[in-house]
Length: 238
Image (tube, rainbow, N blue to C red; front, side, top):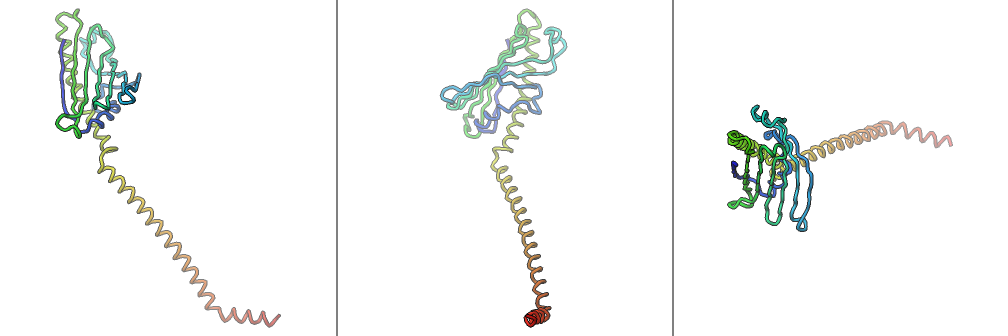
């Protein structure tokens, strides 16, 4: 059995990291996870604990010698059970492979908790994995476990980069106050431009009405004598 351990920090509060976890896959970096299906969700402890079960579909290149041993495809499935505890502010993920378990078992444990040094602004990520190859491979056991550990390291780096990109995108879109201010300002500017155009149109319409009224008034003034004579003649005729 080989062990893998990894820790790093996310520069985002635990609440945001936990919310973003549900949108972690797919992302442009960790392309090996090609599908995520929710199998079960259950609320416990008066809504303070959320338990979820998901099925992850993974596709990645596998060395030919391993494919010859496994005799399968490069697609595998992982069962993940997660627990979010709002009171304790913890997100625990436990996962294991469903394929080839008689040949290779991978059990992963991931924890997200508020960072002890900056609990309001950072999140601590802790990862452990136990990788065990089947005993019947003899000398190949260590080789398979070493390869699995290296693959785990590579995927951990991709996972961190991919999750960072998801967090950054969500921050810019939903959480960044500056972005919200910019959006509000853009909306206000757009409304101001629309109002300005509307006022200009109304002024132009009013000016047209005034000009038409002045034109009619000028006509009446210029032909006042003629209109007066016409009215007088009409009176005399009666």
